Length: 103
Image (cartoon, rainbow, N blue to C red; front, side, top):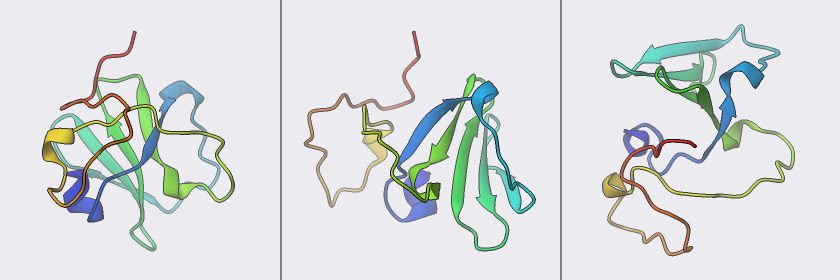
């Protein structure tokens, strides 16, 4: 579904739900894309901002939403069974067909 929404992969970072603060959220809109998942986006320009699965204690924030350096790096790939056939994932990071549980 991320590939269909964005046209490619969706790069995000997980943030504990309790630690997330949105300072200018008036233009954030939500779309319930499945029973467990809602997607947050900018209601002005349509940019993807959040992927929020109700059974997790964290929320995925789009890496493209940050203005400055993030000082972060990729740690894993999810939903790899659904990736486009036009590229390979060859960076050596763990690959999962779904979202793996956290310890």
